[in-house]
Length: 263
Image (cartoon, rainbow, N blue to C red; front, side, top):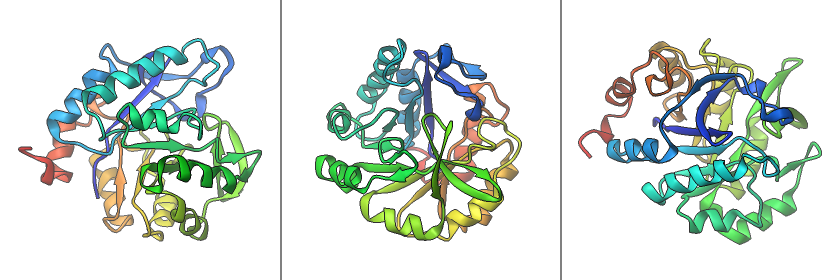
């Protein structure tokens, strides 16, 4: 179990948002926190603490007037600590290798692969050919509907037809190095983790999984460890003091990431 830090970028700024509120119209998102620090500042902090495997997410679509500003922030972070951070948001087979060349350890992909409600295995194969399985993270972020988790795309607004289950994860593990899963129903709320989803994720042990969503207390992180059987990595967003919350960044590192100390 590892703590994976995050840098979410929207309208050219590092932010924490309520996940389900993000829309393309007017580049809107309900904001929990807007930072005065740049993405490079956060990358510098994560480098100091030795925290690897963090994800940078560009939240504006490529057609947005803010995408260039998002991209500049991401590139600054990658330059600060190359080959340690993952990048997601608008990734395709055409631009994936460029992000790897710019210093990303992995690219994170959802919408390009899950298109029109279906899994495009031809696109998965193309990505693997372009950058290698070892550089690919599949984002299986999901929302619950009628007691079933469905993978969602396009900034978590569109439901696919694809249910998230262990069999699917084991199949997709042949194409990627890790999974990233946002529990979108609780993302950005700090109201507690999705225990049912964590139990589902714990049933998959082929590749590493990072869980995000709903963490508000140290007890929530303990739940991730217990329900996830110590196998599931985690990230903390709005609840973290770095993003205006009450959970202490250093306390999380000291309690859950002792191997990183004094690096």
